[in-house]
Image (cartoon, rainbow, N blue to C red):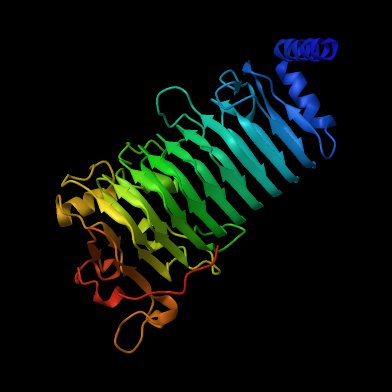
Length: 394
């Protein structure tokens, strides 16, 4: 009984001290932590005004009392752009707490091998706005990334974003009311599965962009996800590439090679269920000789498409184009059809190493826009795309 009383007294004292100055308590623990330590965030809502920084640490766990119980609020933030910023670390686990209303990104992780987000919520709690921070969970230039059972709400770019990274899992997460729910960008060997992306502008995006240190992503598998009613207006700040994603986008592959999309439920996304496009469709100039702007080796199979006839939202150039061309009957899969001569065989079909394969989707419909020839030869014929590819092993 005495031991139990002592433990309870210690816990009470710790929570009291933490609540008096959570900024100092947490930052001190971040600085003093040694390999193998667990940093505890007690239950409660704690108002912070500066970014929390973790630099050069190994083998740490930062653990709260629960996603809805331990809340770090940065609504009054006056210093720093991120809520939490982690750099040059190894084997860090964040779990069971929330970060809300950061001035910039909620949690940014750079140059880290082994970063796990387990049951972490990141959110902007007011109305959706271009003034919200860009990214909720934001690992960049990392390896061995796990994002599992997390929630992301209200980001003006991407709620869950993984960029220029390798060996990635995003699973069991919910992303809602972001511009992009989940975005995998210039990233290799990523598994995106069992997630629920809804009420974003675009549900799940797989992008490769130019002029970044890591030139090309690929080997990305997107499966067993529910991608539903991603029709929220695009509220990205002007100039952002994600600002070109039309409201009503289920999934979008931009310039990334070797992508598999299968066993997903893609429902009531008013503009397009799955888009496959080159970077040229953005009409943005780039100066990067090592960048390949055209996607290839894309496999789309065993998905279920559901959509009532509806006009695409008209607040976006791409959506206006699709509405003009197809009215309420835009096909579920839209391919821009942009290629290079060396990608084609003598008959004008994609060579095996560049092929796009579409098979066994429920309620399947397709269009090749022939965009590089000014939409002159739009075709709905799936015959050239009836093929299979060797599945990537997880």
